[in-house]
Image 1 (cartoon, rainbow, N blue to C red):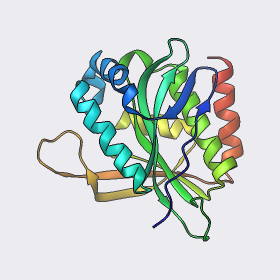
Image 2 (cartoon, rainbow, N blue to C red):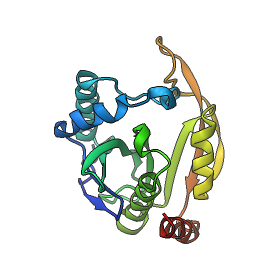
Image 3 (cartoon, rainbow, N blue to C red):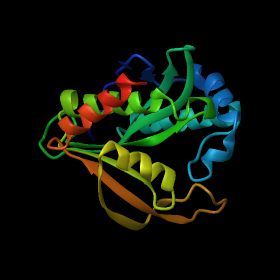
Image 4 (cartoon, rainbow, N blue to C red):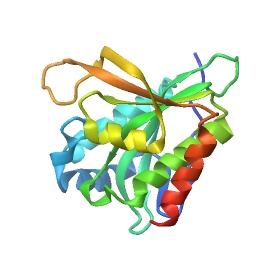
Length: 205
């Protein structure tokens, strides 16, 4: 079994991504409670108890080398305003570090949405993936129906690889139900242009 991905803290001008822990639960629960109307196609915990269970699940998956979860800390307030993670790593070259990683499981409270936090968080995660982990591919996936998420992914410059039917669970049903996933990717060849695009966007934020 591969070793868990090494925890890391990634810091920019607007956001700090730090290893997720139970100390983040009160802030995350408060951030998620402000306006939940944008979470219809994304599962986000509701309340402190649900947030604690959510963190428990992610930390257990981290121990199994399945994810590396982060709390998104708004530097303007010092509070956790959402979560994101690396997930679904793949190893092909016999290295300790993965050759492919996905960025996903991302949500922000309403007050942090449409701010520089999300743009800079993506820049930090992509920079670490390509320039420190040395991956060959970053995947970004979302529900086929999540047009807001898909537009944001496409603004990054990620390429649509295709649609995978019955790929993961839908977030908007009580009983387990499969969704069609829109799968996007970024490769090292694309990365310099996307890096410049994100930095230009942040320069005016």
